[in-house]
Image 1 (cartoon, rainbow, N blue to C red):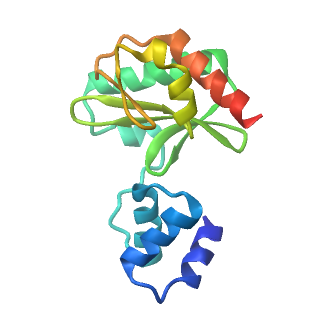
Image 2: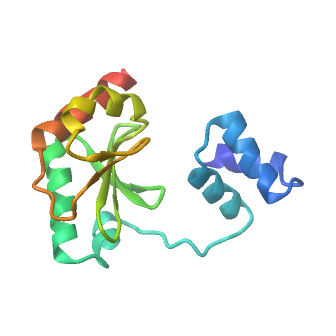
Image 3: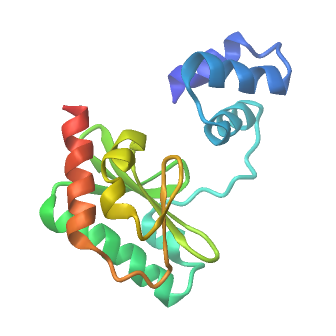
Length: 163
């Protein structure tokens, strides 16, 4: 992150929309990530930070908590060296220095995603046809009966992609 804060210092004289555009156009940031970096670099501390996954899950009902735990357990069963972390204010699985898989809990569904996985989602399209597949995420029900094999295979594809 220190690298990105140094980048922000270089463009500190620009207006907010120009900073967002710079990060998106020159560094491939999503709107959300660019916004987070710009706001943080401007001193915003209003975004709640979670110290761990239990803290992230605390506000959610038991069904959502159980589903997220089952998603991570399914992947970690095959890849026990993966570490559960909070990154970009959401739960993720990390292997060494690489992010592998993310989860985001919303009101009516849960988003799952292999990190940087747009190609993975394309490759897995036949196995994902019963779900709503977005650009980089897959919507699953909050009470999803976790498909451990699907999750493990997506994690394997991410691991293969990072070499």
